[in-house]
Structure formats: C-alpha cells, structure tokens
Length: 122
Image 1 (cartoon, helix red, strand yellow):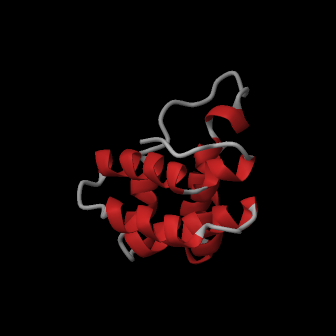
Image 2: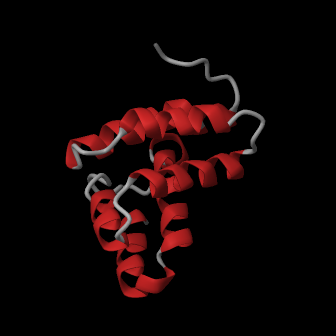
Image 3: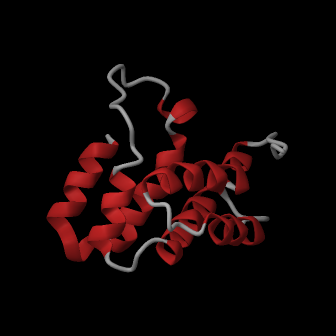
C-alpha cells in the first residue's frame, strides 16, 4: 500500500526507503530491507526535507556493510543509466539525494573512491 504523498517532504520517508530498499536488494540480497524501512518510518515524522535525507543516509550506514568500499560499490550498482538529458532530476532522480549524503558523511577517508561515486551521481 502506497503512503499518502501531499507535501514534498513526504517523498523522503518510508516511500523513499522502500524504493531504495528494493534497488539495493537487487544487487545486495543480504540487505535487511525491513530494518532499513522501519528505521526511516519511525524517525522521519516532523523532520524537514534535509533532515529526512540525512536520516535515510544514516539508515543506509546502519544497514549496509560497515566497509565503505563495499557499501559504496553496492550504492554505485543501483544508480542505473546516466540521465543523458539532464532533466527531471528532482522528479525522477530525487532518490539519489540520500546516496549523495551517505557519501558526504562517510567518504572523506576514501576521497578518490568518493569522487568517482559523486561523478556517477551527476
């Protein structure tokens, strides 16, 4: 059952967690999608869009392998085809915002790898 989406922040809650969980599970079957989604659902109420993006990034950190190189490889494998027209970023590719935040928060010790991942996001 889809959750009601009436405000922009509603895109950055359990709906986005479900979308990301589905994409991640396709490339990383050991991903605990229920734990990931539950964490986001329980903690996103009354948070701003920016706080929700960070919350989802934190849930990624909690539920992906602790080794950054392994985690970023998983995330890079969910990105799909390049957005060749550079349109629709906020309508169709909004789900990448928590991935970018994950890289920002966790990738400093792996600068080169993080730069490659960011390049894939843009």
